[in-house]
Each structure stands twice: as C-alpha cells, then as structure tokens.
Image (cartoon, rainbow, N blue to C red; front, side, top):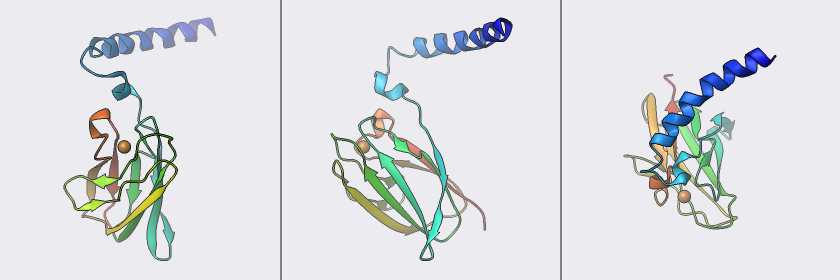
Length: 137
Ligand SMILES: [Cu+2]
C-alpha cells in the first residue's frame, strides 16, 4: 500500500513543477480542467446535446461527439454571473448569449467528419472552449 502511494506521488511531482513553471503567464482561471464528454442523443430526428456553462468559464461536456446530420446544441447557463454562448469556430454557428439561469439553442448541419473547436466568444481567452467531433458516416 505505502509503496504504491509513493509511486503515485513520484509521478505527480514532475507534473506539478511543469504547471508551476507556466503559471507566471496565465491567470489561474486558465488552468481549470475541461471536463465531460457526450454523444448526442436523437430527439425528433435531430441529434441533441445539452451543454452547461457557469461561473467557472468551462463547458460541460467539453467534448461532444455527433454523427453527420442535423445537430441541436442547447446551452444552459448554470452560473450566477456572466452570460455565455456556444460558437463553432470558423463556421457561422453561434447561439445567442444565454444570461445567468437562462438557455439558448442553435441548430445546424454537422460539418464534414473531423474535430472542430467551439468556444464561448466572450470567454475564449479564459479557456472556455471545447471540441466537437463529427464521426464519418
Ligand atoms: Cu462564457
């Protein structure tokens, strides 16, 4: 038992040093981890995913997997502060800003197979980003 705990600590220490070395240039909010992944579920023939965003400036889930076809993203703002939106970078797919406690949605046709970045356009610099994975076929 003690032996395995020691081994785990040895693995963690170099990571902590690496994170500390870049902390001078990044505000602490940027080091919050991304979390969660989801595969869209079919609702009335449209793949639907609900994404939460709150006061931590993170999307949950931050990785969304869809198949080709129509996709609807429903953004819930679970925070008590800033509004958020959900925007697929490089494509004209953006929800309106959802205020604290509110929700907004956008429906679009999935782009070709690949991995795309989505952001909150007003908190992108604070790391409010995620990945949309479009599967082939
Ligand atoms: Cu935001």
